[in-house]
Length: 333
Image (tube, rainbow, N blue to C red):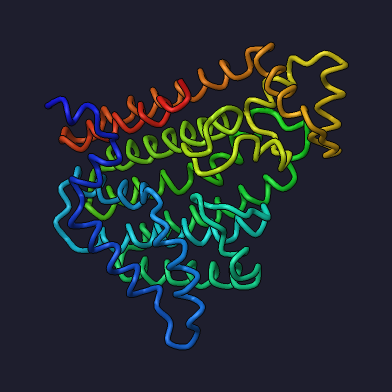
């Protein structure tokens, strides 16, 4: 490996290695997000799809299929399916969270309205199921249908868990598995399944995606309390303002004194936030080592992701996936 490779981000290395297939995925996405009867559908989807997200999830599907030696055409369908499911959940998420920014741009619900966002999200979910069926694999359908249900379940669980200081790490993990890791693990697992990989390999790919997704989300939650908005496309303190009980908060609350707990009840459960509260929350997290403990948790999941890859066939892209697990948590160092 030359110096340039060491500097390049793993997702950029993946994108370069999979550029032909990703171009095919983009073509398929454009083709399937068209609608002759409702021009608003391609307008809304194009706004999100062209916003240039990292396209990490479809790349994971393509990489898994290639590592397992797949020669057929359907990994492209599956990668497009995964991106459609992801985009549908983003459209719905922004309505639920009443967000105004996504990937540094105004959200669809802000530019159009909530109705359009919800209905176009529904359309993309339906499109994703059409694409899955075309692969002819019931097992693929099973994995992605389960992932879609888990994502929805995670979002609903978050509604009740988000502003409740009684939310512990187990429930937090369940929410994270739902809203983030379920699609990562489905993306990697279906790549192995479509390639007809042995059971141990598809299981390892599932494990990798699950652990990577959890590490990714914990890192994201950490960045909310001290990442630059440029790095993640959202503003520092968004989760705090939305009163989301994430891992740094859970760890700080677990060690809180009576007085500190009263602060958390006021700002998170009651939503009575004033100037200086975010800084105070961050100081409390620092005081109790909550940030460092959450960092350790993220690093632990990344290490598990790398470990899972040991059961996957040796391939240059396997190393890139391993680097990706490292990279996801390097953002929080």
